[in-house]
Length: 153
Image (cartoon, one colour):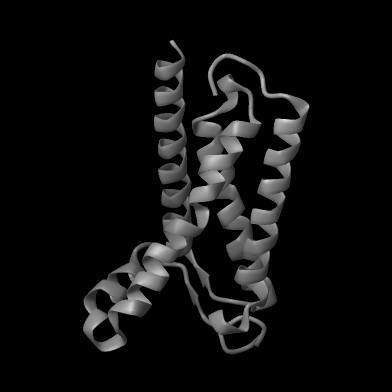
């Protein structure tokens, strides 16, 4: 993580890890029946920012705290690896904002696919939460990178 370049083996391992992460995400976002996927026609959409987030926070007693945590924290946590792994695959000057933009556009693509296929719910709040997850992952990466650089001095 310091100024040294990663070996081909390290980059290969990181790419494999990232591709496994993407495959798991594709499964859960589009096919996992336990998450309400795989049954087109019963899902809705939300195009109003913070509408569903507010609804979850207002009605947490009725819907249960577990569902609130699963939806809100789950959408954030699901994209933390994106913000953590992707910077390791990019050159130093290409990190930061580009990682966040890549996460944002990836989340937009996921929601668009859910909209046109009706697999899952197209929800603009998911884009907000997913992008927040990318930012959390990137912050974790930057902290770890800073600690490692400091230790190696």
